[in-house]
Length: 100
Image (cartoon, rainbow, N blue to C red; front, side, top):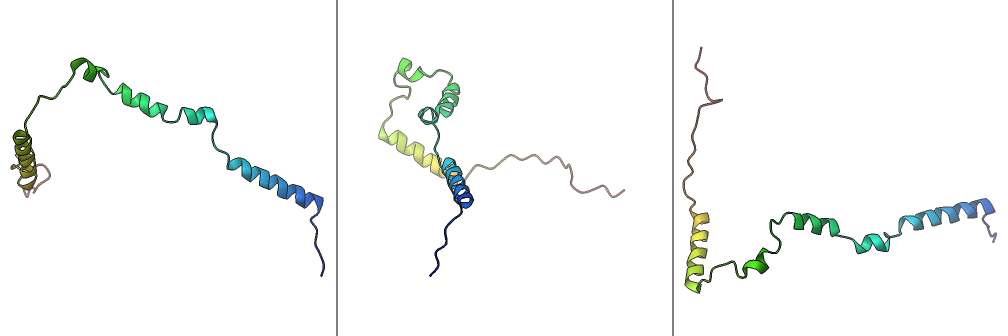
């Protein structure tokens, strides 16, 4: 049985390709990973008018009992089952022609 050996040029090329592919598998730097999601948090915070409003005003919702909440939920469900009629005004643009 004959054994084949790699030439030094082929071995160097294989090593170079392997190292190149290993470089593609590297993750980001720890500095980048530590700040991951900061831009999203900054954008979300920028959308608030007063970020400290819940702590300044305490409880913002008025107290309510179970009966009131249950009736409000039933009204909401009924509004989806039978929505109110829509008020659509047809102007007649793009409809039929006058025939002339």
